[in-house]
Image (cartoon, rainbow, N blue to C red; front, side, top):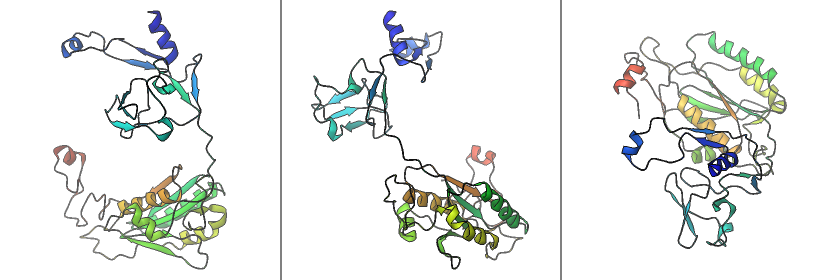
Length: 315
């Protein structure tokens, strides 16, 4: 029992059972269910701290731990969670059965990794607006609300703008002389590599890896593009598509707009927290993520259709 209490004090973990049933018959005989209480912020003594990043499984991202098995002369290790076979990184090539890293020692079931502090990054806001509003007052009301919201956004925050309807427009905010956009077809899917090619953006080269460079004219500090962004919003017009409102729904490519937004952030601000703010006025009717046809003869699906597996446009 002393060993169990010591393990609980070291790992901050307590189980309702300390032995796992070895067969289905033993499992069915359990009166109390298997449960675990974990206290991640529990203060423990003599906790080992490592000054490098952990080695993770390539499939489930579990950390290298004492329960992993080494193979072929300590060149590979097997994950006990998903059984994935992984190769040790180059820095671990000198290990052996007699010289194991701390992660594989039986007494090191709990360790802490101390990582280098991250470079602070200004908040990133990418606005994605649907311009296929059903009523004439919806779009002006949305623009008015966004202009008020911009007053509350920090001036050093990074902002971008994407509008969409039948097509998707990414606004080049660094171009002050006129409204300049890159247009995407709303009826087809785009890979991140295609978006990178069309927008001609790439990973920043600054030390923190998150400061926008001159090659990124789409997401810039608000203090530098506030006048241009406000003018674009004030001049925003409904999507120019024409259709019979009594027989058809508007072409709304929400899926492509979100895909382009995420790809843009992926190439310009990798490994950085950002916010995509989507303002949509209806269901997706074209392109990826389509949930209903443009014809009003087709009713929009409900949860009942999804449960019965009779819903259309489900991949």
